[in-house]
Amino acid sequence: MIEALIVMLVLGCAMGLILYAAAVVFKVEVDERLEKVTEMLPGYNCGSCGHPGCSGLAAALVNGETDTVNCRPCKPERRAEIVDYLNSTPGPDGNTLKVKSI
Ligand code: SF4
Image (cartoon, rainbow, N blue to C red):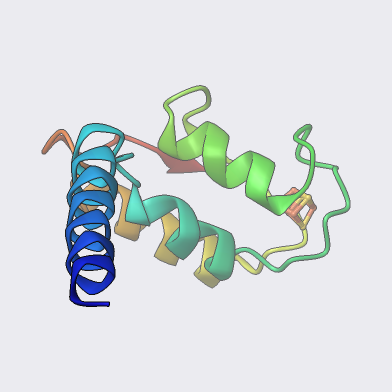
């Protein structure tokens, strides 16, 4: 009985260490700006910006694929907020973006 408990304890510790190592090795850096910009966009997912939904435009902005917040359903004040946020908030690499509004 004691041997079985010891074996289970050792196996549990070994599995925990393996999971910890996998979490460290395969850690994915998440750009928090992506979620924030997606929340700031209206969420209509109309596609008139030329991207597949609001998260598509947010991803294009954050990844530097476009430099224009061209969401026409957005009020100008909201577009300005997004521009200010992206131009002043550094990403994981420490750099900020240079975006503009339509
Ligand atoms: S135009 Fe605006 S509301 Fe429409 S999908 Fe693009 S970001 Fe979303």
